[in-house]
Image (cartoon, rainbow, N blue to C red):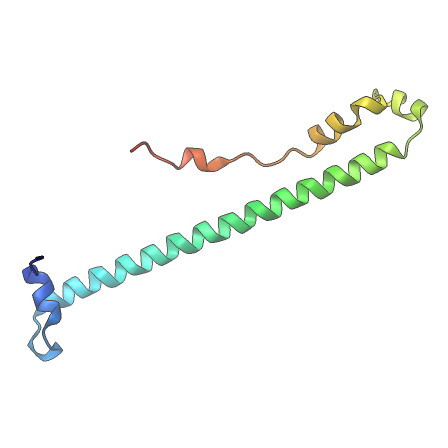
Length: 108
């Protein structure tokens, strides 16, 4: 059986019987919830930002490949490429974003 702490017991009292300590605890809880919600929102925004970056990079790669494939062998040689190097040139021109989450993770 779990015991209720004195702070929790104060929170269970009707508002008219609560003291300043209970109000302080409620304020701390509200601030913690706001911080949690802000952190979750930031993670969700970061996820969609990364998805957008990846999709943009993929689209740029496809456009680059299409444009390079449209060139003649002579034109490719003029810019220092061969047909077999088109994929790697497109990958170098539009790199995919790295997984930057590794920097924010901490060891257990």
